[in-house]
Image 1: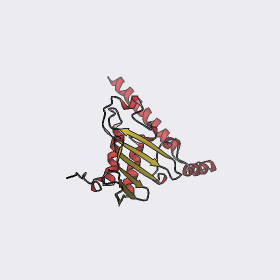
Image 2 (image 1 turned 90 degrees about the horizontal axis):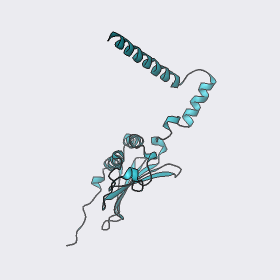
Image 3 (image 1 turned 180 degrees about the vertical axis):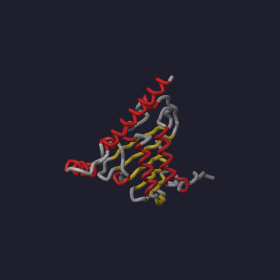
Image 4 (image 1 turned 45 degrees about the vertical axis):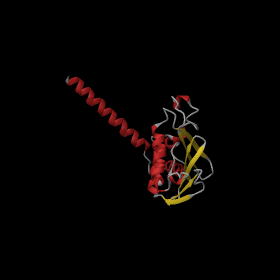
Length: 195
C-alpha cells in the first residue's frame, strides 16, 4: 500500500512539473527581439488555439430570427455598439419596431457563450439537413436562425429547426439568452383576434 501511495505522489509530482513547464513555455517572455516579434504577432492576430473564437470587438452584430413554419415571427439584432433592434414580422403587426440598449458585458457574455459551449463556427448551416445532428424529427415546430456578422460583411448563420430531437442544447440556450439580453418579452404583443 505504501508503494502505491509513493507511486501516486510521484505521478502527481511529475504532472505538476509538466503543467508548470507548459505554462512557462507558453507565457510571453520579456527578453530578446524574437519575443518582441512574437508579442507583435499576438496583438495582430489571435493565438492559434483561439482561432475559432470571437472577440467582442471583432463581431459587428448578432441577429436572431424566429419563425413558425414558413411564417416569420420577429427579427432581433444586437450590435457591438450596444444598440438592439426588434422588428415584428407577424401578419397583423408586421413592420413594428422597438429599440433598446445592451450592456457591453452582456454582449461579450453572449459571444463567449457562442464560443463555448456552443462552438458556433463548427455547427452546420442547417441543423435539419444534418441527420446526425437533427435526429428524430417532429413536424409543425418553430425554428430560429442565429447569424453572427463580422465588420467586413462576412457572416455565419445556423438554422435551428425545433422539431429536431437532437439539436444542441447549447444552441437553444444561446437563442434564449439573446432574447433575454434584449428583453424581447417587452417587445412582443399578443396576437390580435378578429371579433
